[in-house]
Image (cartoon, rainbow, N blue to C red; front, side, top):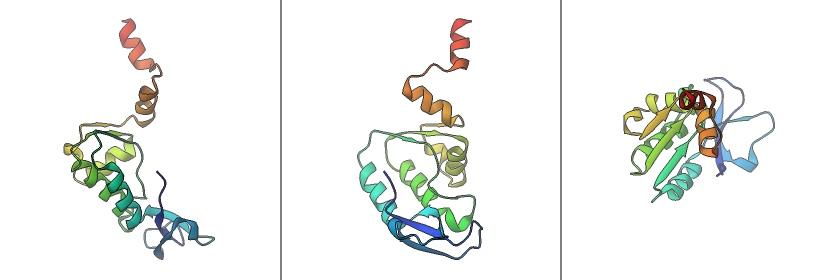
Length: 133
C-alpha cells in the first residue's frame, strides 16, 4: 500500500520546514519524510483482523524526531494488533525498539533482505551450509 498523504520537508534536516500534504501535491524541491495521518488510518483499517503481518522498512525518517511519528505509530499498531508480527531489517528492528514495542513483536530480525528472500522461497547460503553439515 502506498501512502495517500505525507509529512514533507524543504530539506533533509531534522529542523527543516515541514507540512502535511496529499502525496500528489508535494511541491517541487520538497521531499517526503514520513507518512501522514490519513495514511496511518488507512493502514490501521487494512491491518484490522490480520493474522500475519510482515514489516520490512520504516515509513519515515524515524531517526529525526520530527519525522518519526508515522514509523512509531505503525510499530504501536502492530504491537496491539494481535497478529503474528515479523519485523525484518536492521532499521525496522531499531524502529520497534525505539518505539518501545520490540518485546511485543513475534519475531524481530536484523536480516531484512535475507528475511524477504526466505519468504520468497530462495535458498539462503548460511542455512544451506548448516543443512549440509
